[in-house]
Amino acid sequence: MESNTKNKVDHLIMPATLEGETDDLYREKYKMYLNPVSDRSKYGHIDGKDEIRVYTDGVFDMFHFGHARYLMQAKNMFPNTYVICGVASDKDTKDLKGNTVMSEEERCESVRHCKYVDHVICPAPWTINLDFLKKHKIDFVVQNNTPYPMGDIPDVYKPIKDLGMFLPVLRTETVSTSDYITRIISEYDSYLSRNLQRGYSRHDLNITYLKEKRLEARRTVAGVHRIINSYITDFLEYFYQPISHRIISFMSPVGSDNEDDEDKRNAE
Image (cartoon, rainbow, N blue to C red; front, top):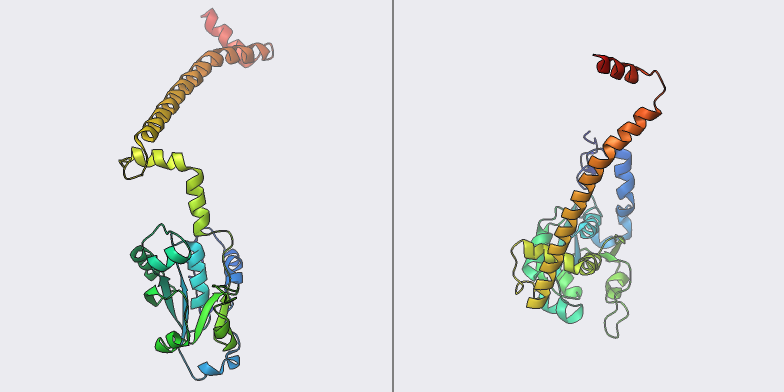
């Protein structure tokens, strides 16, 4: 049944509706992530502005629903919000955080397809300053409220917070790129075997010849096990069905309709 919410709660831009999900459940699921600014008077620098420009940034590797919820919050800060999203470069990310799964171009392309984003800056600076905000006519910076230390600086966003140009959003704690990578690593051999079967070479997967042969042997053994289990199951079903039928017949009350029918057939 189609929800009446139609992807919107009041003026808010929301995720797609889900088949079978009620409007109440839909609202309950996302209400904690929607905290639009209710009192504009606290922010004198946006007086008289219709469109509010907010900036947020990140690595956005393996773009997932946690990223989307984060950007959804940015988009819904004001009734008419223009979201500028910065995507960190491959070089900065590798130097300051570590390797990514997706390239800079792939991460940028993922973000620009998100309906909560209006403009993408790629590559974006790892840290921003007031000159950057002025250049892009940014009214607010949106990030989670946890201090972000860098070197001797306890929080790189403190100058922006002090100016009243910082708006906090929530992270989705149940999902992260690191969680997904951990899942893949924990089932490493399974995914290697899967991709070998799909035509990837051992060179594509960066594994040795011996590793490839071990995985092939493991698949062969697993296949034999499945065949043997199938034969055993078929045999047991074939063997036990007649026995169970006889036991049920024996336990049936004397003079039952089934026995009478069988006696008649025997008499004929």
